Image (cartoon, rainbow, N blue to C red; front, side, top):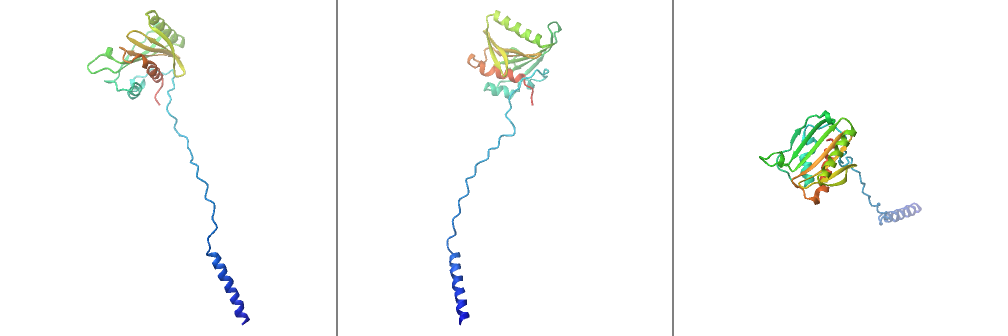
Length: 205
């Protein structure tokens, strides 16, 4: 009988423990909220970097058509035309190209909306001198002359009666962006010409 009482006590204890097991489990703390991880972009946005580069042989390497249209905010008619100039040793010019953009169908170079010209010279001093001489000639013709920023370089905005141009030099190269036949209104000159000038001196990636 004593043995039965002993096992009876053990059985009662086991039931008590099982009852405790079936109770509500203690609550655990909620995990901390996940903080989103911000990964910086692996490819930085393309920023034009002007360099003194060899003359391109294609207008797409000067200012691509899609870049031109995006900068202007409209699509120009026709395809760009390139004119390759000749060397002029007497003034130290070693090469020249002109790209004509926005020529309507069955029209000529004179009807282009934007013209971009690049030239190379024997040295930096000659390039700067040619720019200075051009600026002074325009000033003498009554044009308004303003120094402007072109990327990290400086350029000169020349506002004439029928044409406005942005001219400058970088190393042994010179650049000029022309707004022909007052295609762009005066209020938009600074939003467009410096961008095109910077792009035309930036090699493609």
